[in-house]
Length: 113
Image (cartoon, rainbow, N blue to C red; front, side):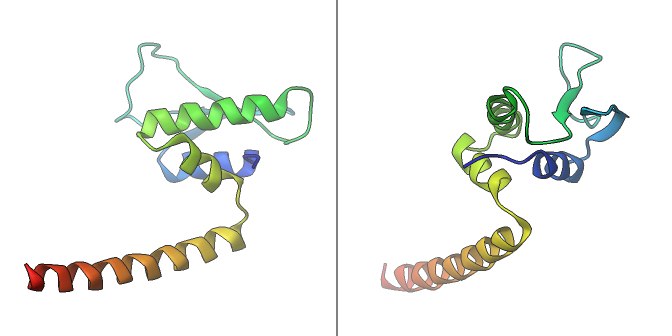
């Protein structure tokens, strides 16, 4: 599994991060106001392209750091940020089905107690 730059960018923007600057190689994002860092000028740098020397390792570390910021299991974050749109939609539908099964099961368990 390899996280993709475009997915990391989309995830952070969905969480309120704003694009501060763009260069030919990177996007720079500022955190939303509710996230506080010791460094008042903290930014996340996302490569614009997935290819390049050490880019894979950088994206993996960045993914794990984002997971830590949001309190999400790093391997769940890795899986999410490695998937394309179609795969993610399928995964969401599958998780809804599983959740429905769990709710039905829990309902029966509660009645049996």
